[in-house]
Image 1 (cartoon, helix red, strand yellow):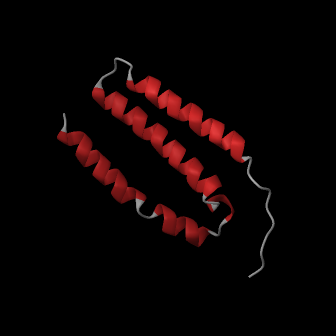
Image 2 (cartoon, helix red, strand yellow):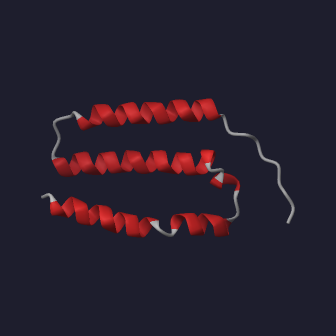
Length: 90
């Protein structure tokens, strides 16, 4: 298999974006919102951060499709677990 060259990601920029998202999560957690809305917003921001880490720090952005499928396949199970936990505390 032939190795392809790709541009290196701007790690500092990605780190700053992750920091801003983390600070946004902390600020969002203190808002006076219904718990379901709060949980959904926090989960969405956490998924966004996880995707950025996987794409850039784990270099999945430059990997073949079969590795993407292997990395993404457990996500439906994680979603099911999160939904069960969310419904437990209503």
